[in-house]
Image 1 (cartoon, rainbow, N blue to C red):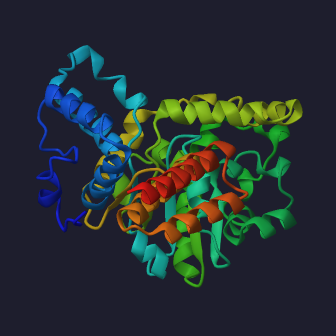
Image 2 (cartoon, rainbow, N blue to C red; image 1 turned 30 degrees about the horizontal axis):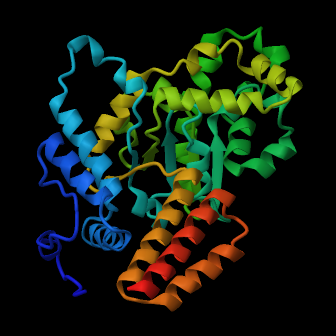
Length: 360
């Protein structure tokens, strides 16, 4: 079979069934997908190959993408349905001044997002020998959890803060009840961030990551951070809360009890204010050079890897490359990290493709 060099050539072949965004009705979409489903296996492989080659997705994936788009375009939301949607639907992650931080031109980065949204995971992808990573949660009741020497090992910046301007905040639960909230919690984060900005300017040889919910809870003007790197997780409130619940369930009772003692009085700060974080998102989304990325979980990465292998099988099939299919088969059989289900999916497709090649 002649190999086509562009999408239009493939669309003109009546033996193929390829779904594109040129389809404008659900009836037309369903008709095209039914035609794909009844194709011989060989022509399904060719259809998927060209669909992935020119559109980036297989035919079934394109079907669901276009279906969702057509459904969304045809559905009219009532006004009372809109307010709660933002709590359920995740936004892409935003990266502001990423290149500047990577090169060291900007040496301080703030990571924002809901509790449980993946801020710490994002920070760990940036960590290195020259990066000082501080979680703002650790500023509360620090004395109960860090000796002065442990603070030094944790972070030079944090240690310097508690030895100097922040010395009055180096307290534990025993001292906390004697300090008015407005003299402790309502001040420590503001004082520390201001200290951190000055400290980073004086220590250009290192990079600093500061992550936590407290930035948008205590700073109302996002433009204050426009000279620095700011990364904002887009994970929805609902998804973040589910992650927090799973995380807490994995802790033993003593750890969970300790967590409650630390943050019992500050519980209101964990009922995150969606409007406040959206102020930051709206501001930085409009800034030049902003980078937008969808969150990728470990499950997403594994599924993407499997899809890539299935696409590679089709590519080998279209090019009559049986040795290439055998290489994929052998690699899959030796891959100890693949789940049994995914291994079965790939091996079955390899065996089927080899059989189909031999009967052509």
